[in-house]
Length: 162
Image (cartoon, rainbow, N blue to C red; front, side, top):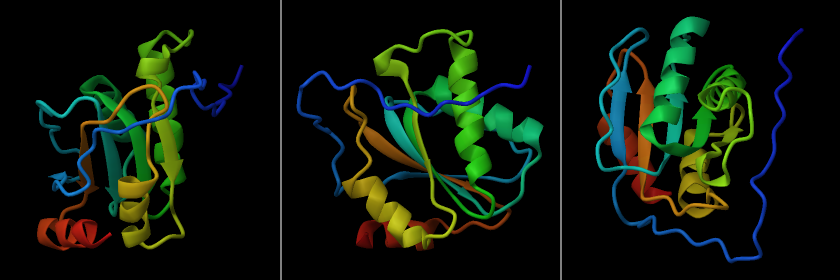
């Protein structure tokens, strides 16, 4: 039987959503080429991630990266790049797998969005001003750049301007 992915928002508890994310702090930039080793993300949890997918990925490696995001403490993932909707689905599946396809606790539910037809600057703006987890304050932002080419200065500058 095929897996059906259901998108849902974590339930609201009639409590204002707050974020401890310092909008003035620089995000952590991580560039990983397709198939590359994923680093430990220390002291960032819980965090939001912008996956900047400039390089096509095999489904298997994409699943590994998605599992790494979920296990590393990502609670809000925004995907950008060609065919980035596959990242939305892949992280959703990784989140389901983490809990044996059962109920996911509100404080571990990963929110996911994809932004294929938007400029990356708009995704950065969304990350800074609109991406809030309904159950947990997010401490930091990780820019996960899937590419052979380093664009740290460019992306950090665009993020600061957003």
